[in-house]
Length: 450
Image 1 (tube, helix red, strand yellow):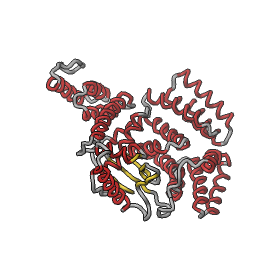
Image 2 (cartoon, rainbow, N blue to C red):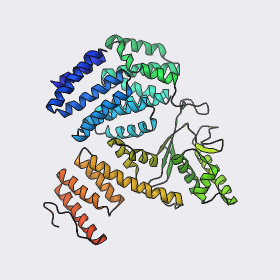
Image 3 (cartoon, rainbow, N blue to C red):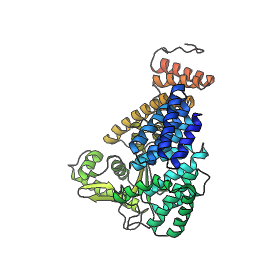
Image 4 (tube, one colour):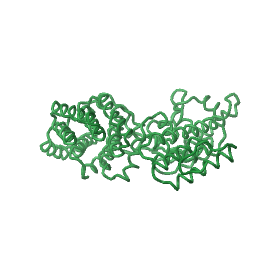
């Protein structure tokens, strides 16, 4: 019955009948709470989030989805958790948290490989992000894919609304898109416009980011800068590897990606251990020149990849920067399991391998400690025992002497009904305690010898 109430409330919402939708949501919540029907209650909170989102009450929408997250986390409702992430992604978009959106999208794209049904919704939000960042050509192509997919009609209708806005921005196919949208509105009603009209007004009045298509770029070309510093040292622009000739040039790029706009003296102090030596200033000039030259080979003409504004250097804001260490740090401060998992996957090894400047050594130790703590936190909060086991195995790779990780791993393997793997983990734990720490194992588990 409550499933029917939930579906009916969403149907009323799509018709714009808000009072009826709200009453049905409240009745369904009450029934689920009284009868402890938690899976459906989590879904009802998702509907309530959509109810507030339709009215553009974003904070209330977020509060409702956070209630759904609490329930899905507690009762390990994996499928519901994916829908929660999709809701949060759109909320983050509206709030202008684009960096977090890129991380969340990357994780959702990875998870969609195991759940094909969410691909159109992931594509829809990917298109929204491109639209928010004013890459209208890419947004239009992505919305076209949603429009032709077998997804919910509401999603298709909203894609057509966005495609009309893209056509207006690009000044092409406007009449054709208007006709397609009129056909849609005749079928599902003009209330579908309410979902996104406030977004278009907001972007018109308060653009949250500069357009990616700057005059110095080829029309509609976005520049994606990827910096890998954990376990390797790789730079790519639009998936093309950039050959950075000097290690100090790579250091400069990573410093700017991590710290943002920085003064020349600050970077010389960090990278050359002191700005007072005149030679260090010359070294900086050479390293910066070589860095700019290497990056510029993969950029449009007249595009300056490292800008100097006032007395501070910075990576050109036109770049869409993906930096593995930054994504790890975003995950550290998050309580959202998918973002945490996406951040942990960034840790492929020690920070800036092969380099040993003081600031690198400090950051390397911090990154390892953060990755270890993140792995333990993921394992303790994971929906599934198998997922928890993978996180604890990662923690052991980061610190082979971490007793807590072994103990938690053994428990997770037993919970996932893998007795042989649990026995192997127990033997590893016992050997580590005796050979590395000179101690007898403190834990004794059923079915395992001490």
